[in-house]
Image 1 (spheres, rainbow, N blue to C red):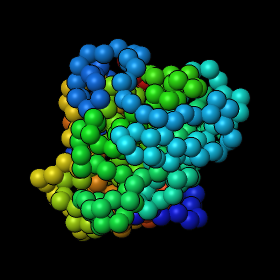
Image 2 (image 1 turned 60 degrees about the vertical axis):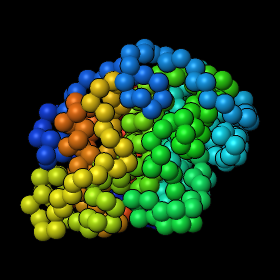
Image 3 (image 1 turned 90 degrees about the horizontal axis):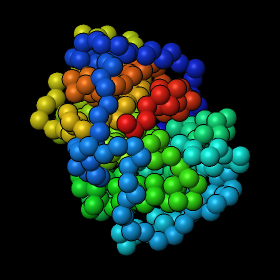
Image 4 (image 1 turned 90 degrees about the vertical axis):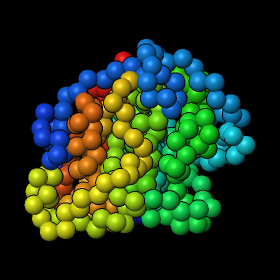
Length: 325
């Protein structure tokens, strides 16, 4: 979905957790289980997972500038990304893969998620923000030909160029910076939120948790099919209001696995978002709840289609409590 930046207000965040009604989208304390190789959503690996065999060319600098652009070539494509690596990092740090919204620039994954604020004050955190590609075709997320967005249509982690890139980034971050394979997380806003979730669901043996800002689970044929925007701070508040949607038949960006390791999810959305409806985050929470995932849902009164304020600093205590088993 379209990236939207701007001034962010100080907004109320309400955490919906604990074993609530899955239809209302409240959280659960479902346990995590082991998973297999990239894209298979199952298996019984243990932490740390084995090195990935993905092939790539290029490398990260051992001591990068705080914000530095680099390129890796994977699957025949040369891809640009931003590294946000403050000096004085700890040994075996965590890695956050931060993804921008539709049309975003290479740095926007960092700024959209505000992962820079977290990394500045926490020497356990490094951030890599890859740039999406200009795509020839549209998809289910209101995209058309020529838009810049992350691909969630190809589900195979050995074929999808963006998943191949994620795999290469993880391997290079481990090789150069000694990143802890048990603490790799994804985060994003809008289309980046959908992709963060997609990566977690397609590579559950590699991803400990994900952060979704203004994304969700889309059972409509396209995100534009639901225009609901409401008032309140719970899915129960929304469900009784005019315009509440009732889509079925699709599972975008990816099927929620019911076996294997289940990455923990931190979800945030504004009630008045009229671009990507908060209905979708409520449906994501309901699906995670039904499948036994551990997650938190945070709904705020207002803010429209903008990144949740201070998203990564708010999400980090939750993420940091969840590692690959």
